[in-house]
Length: 303
Image (cartoon, rainbow, N blue to C red; front, side, top):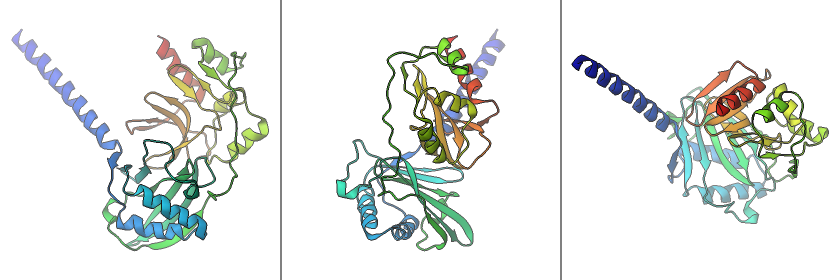
């Protein structure tokens, strides 16, 4: 009997240690809140960034940077990259003269550079009429004190002062329509809390062209019937709501969001591969289609 108690105690200790290791690993992957300013490398790259735009835009960018540098921000060093996002407790705190015209999420510019012959890139992103942050690949931690770089290429992806974004005013339906295909099976498993009127084909096509990845056909089957559908525990995003998350290796486009993470496609891929991106930082490529993932998740939730 004594041996049995000892064995059980050992098992409990091992399980406890395993959970502790997983907890520490998850904590290490979470972005760190900081009020520290930018590094010498980032300041050097920002000067190149400002010069990509005309005087008016350059002044706006400098004003935004001056505002956010001493404020709270999220900085995270991943295995293959580093990301920084400007944080705010309130709505956009900038004045109208400091804001961009574009309100949608978009990639602003990419600068490719070398340090000691090693190649790097920095990608600047915008959202809610302001600079949202940037990501440097590969991980630049050991070169953050560098004050000058060799720029090999630079590209502006979007003019943030344009009004080129497509505006969609989503309309919530008062009754759940009769869907077709796997979407009808889904609503039979769990009743939606919100369903939205589908957008016109021409608008859907324009949004699709803005996404640098091939969308799964099962996702498009949903979007042709509703511009987003919400359930108690998750939602499938309408194509006008798709946003990106910059993770370690690439940007990922959200298709469905759950309490523990997202189902997404990866920027630059043309094969509709799906990924499970957990909020803990784990990324897993999935070998099943979009409809199977969603239906299996919902069946498990209702068991």
